[in-house]
Length: 201
Length: 294
Image 1 (cartoon, rainbow over the protein chains, first blue to last red):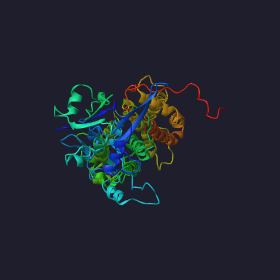
Image 2 (cartoon, helix red, strand yellow):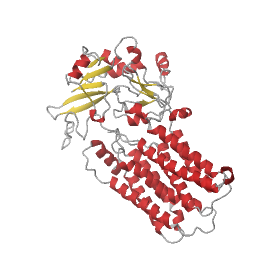
Image 3 (spheres, rainbow over the protein chains, first blue to last red):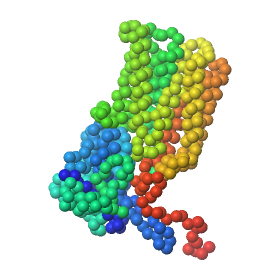
Image 4 (cartoon, rainbow over the protein chains, first blue to last red):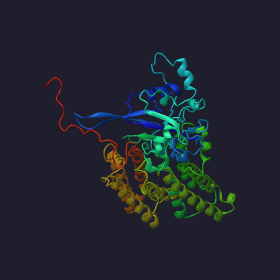
């Protein structure tokens, strides 16, 4: 089994629901994003339009971050997702430099509340303990949800159906069909990272 | 595109480690009278090396887990760099011990030679750490070359000056040091000057890195060239002036490392060779009229 995701840019409307769902599901700190959105203006007046590119970890099969990590904190799960063992991470941030997709972020200190005069909510406090200060973190394909047989929060939330998640090794899955048909392609393919996140443009 | 940050701990590490390694090599080459007791001159260079280690340690988000850094020697150049530079520092410390503890001067010289060899390998490993496809401006032979130029330029000068510490008259600079260090300083000046040249590559990231170097980082570029030029002039000057050449040389190395980390742009996920997957809107040639009608 290899979990993979296809993002259909023809359907993406840039609503950022995936970013919000990710932050909520994984209790990500203010200002930090595991899933972020790039916006582009395309064309020229009067035919200009906006295009959107959701970005996050590509869960590469030949992950540069895994190869570069000196402590072995970065590892690849047997089902495909590239994960970080926070216990082993020493925060050298070499993986951040090595990642061509800018997918990783560094947790540089105590979590600050969204509103200084209100402090952290109980939910935020509970979420903060899941993130190790001084370590690197990133999208996990919502590994905890996968363990329960659910899709990642971003895929489950997308109102446009732009995120398709499934087993790349299952020929009957929609993900597999899109990739096999050549419709869905990886980003920066020439770097040889073999991502498990594909894009339809 | 995002430009690199200062990253001061890594600037200090990548500036001081070549200086420590080159300095020790220079000391071994020019050392006139091998010391039988504690080699305090080597200890001076040990301080450089320990400062470099301290800087790299302070860079870590969780410094007390640094012992894990040697876990992936099979794949990670950073693991290899840690082991190699750590071994160099250890051998340098051993070299500084009194000769009788090592079994004599000859054995100490052997330790020194091994230390320099390991140090050279660690410079190679440091360069490989930064040869990343995700940073096109770094993924170039000059990344490794600049570290060796630092060792052969500023490093050798520091080593030659350390050898003269405590001596009443500095005397003339050894010819070999003048030739090698002078060539390295000249080469580093030329290399820095070439960084200011507009790249032919269509790679958007390399172009953006060049723009960062000649734009916001222009003063660092100029400081680097000026420092190397000053060091070279002092080195070639007659008399004792060469003794102070190490100062602008070290400043030049720090400037070079600062430029290295600041004028880098990550690879563009949007596309390669500056080509976006969709054609972006072009900026208007004339500003649009204000709403007030003025």
